[in-house]
Length: 271
Image (cartoon, rainbow, N blue to C red):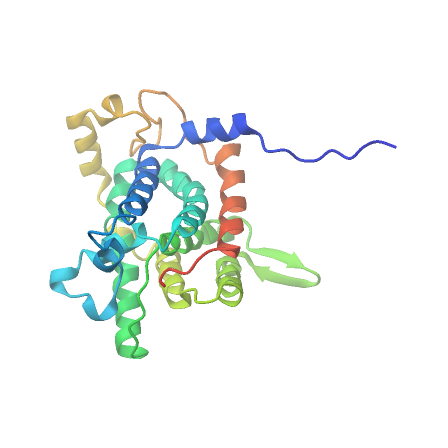
């Protein structure tokens, strides 16, 4: 009787995938790790400084709308969010370019979900729940991916029911809310709404014009100077010469699997 084979973790493929990560994705992971390391010291409370606190978010503290995705409760929270975010962010950067990703994730992809959360939390629910963590971006990117998938594969079948594929992130979000005590359902929902809006094209005007990005790339020769840089024309990662492709097995197959695995056991945005 043949012995069943046990799937093993392929370290060489994992290492190749990590070495192939584009520039902005690497930078985001590095900032998350650096922020966690900085939070270990006792002289300065990084979480109190950078977390999204509704009643402390005003004109003088708008920086919180950009810092909260990088700050995490503990090492496990940070690792799980990194595992979920990395394949999704790598795919997004490969499709849209490094400069576009930089402008969006340090701009509207952080501030719009944050301001939406602050408005709902303060003026609708009357609460002041603190949130932090990159899972807001995980659900945002899941929303973008769900819309893309829906356009090519509108339904998936469970038993005799046809379920719209765009609802997949909502199902995941509900599972997280049910299985992870204290998780920020409202924070995840705000990220998901922005992801849906971007995927449907309603807020694509927030992305910088490609003509300007091409001018900056050419003027600074970013494609030749920066390793793993993805041009706005999506033709190459830069001087390493790795071609981005939506059909890349390391990107497309690993992305949803890792993302879903993390989200199902993830941590809340806030304490």
